[in-house]
Image (cartoon, rainbow, N blue to C red; front, side, top):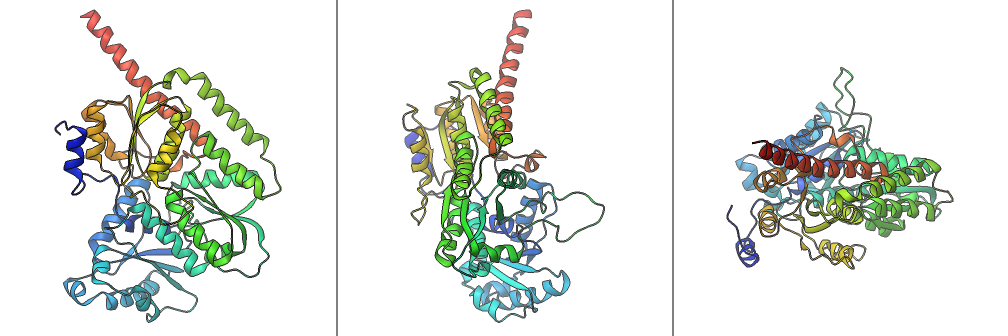
Length: 462
């Protein structure tokens, strides 16, 4: 890759993207659908699309991801996929017996213009079973957008309000995070003695244990009854403005459930905000053991500040994760000088600002001049790093090629991570998760320092 000036970068990427820092909507929709108990995601489009999405999720989570497809042929592409979807719904309920089929669309059917809601209404759906849908054209947004759209569809199809009197429970919308993160969010909520409904909830689904028997529908996931009951909750706490905000806003409009939209709780500040939001709305205190966890995090950040202070870092990935990680590295005394997401940065509602505005707000008062971009690509990030090198790169698996080319330490965080395992079981959220991120960053920087020292020692010996 040739070196480019900032002006040349803008000129070369203004007409399109080179190696986008995102993937398509249906992957996010498929992942969200897996967070409903007994649900089979259904890809309304070609078989190849469904296979790619299943493969990507399976490689990231190291767990089999089940999904069905309408299997478009050339004829479906010309005359529409209505017949395919109706036949698919009938066959899937007969053969695989899910409680819910969650239909998401692909580029092909969106371009044709299939009227999916009308097709579902005229399909043969067994009594007691449900078909929901979300429009997820791949040429709009990203996998985060798809996750948001399917989560919003859960509210559209299921959420009900029995009365004006709300229950003492909280709706938790976790955002596009790993099941290990969802478990940690639930643990913190349980520690405060608060009843909750988390949706979608992929814990127990894509991190299910090996029992020796195949289970088409693992025990995890939010049940339909739980999602219906979200309309009776006292409050909704949406974690991750881009992945969770739309569903929370719809719950407010549909069922009059107030929404609190927060950053993904990565690091001290965001986790504090999450816990204080719970404490504010429920008559409970933050337990001693959680205070101890926070104190341990502060202690280790203080003890190791010299590892991080003044180190420059480039961060890329999903906007909610990048926002949380940026806030954490700033609290460590690091300088995030390149911050990029592939997801488009604007939002249509008042509860969430744009990605670039959120990051600039964080940077205020730090004296850091940073390159910040939404709807960006890895070509742009690479050129930023060539023009202004960094001490550390943080992002998903695809950053390894840049890290290798620029000889920069690399910490894998986000989606997808295809060349490492275990990550989906271990949280990066909460105080415990922040400790893990601090360890990963510290180890990456120290490994580089040790390697450089060894090279110098070798040169002296020679």
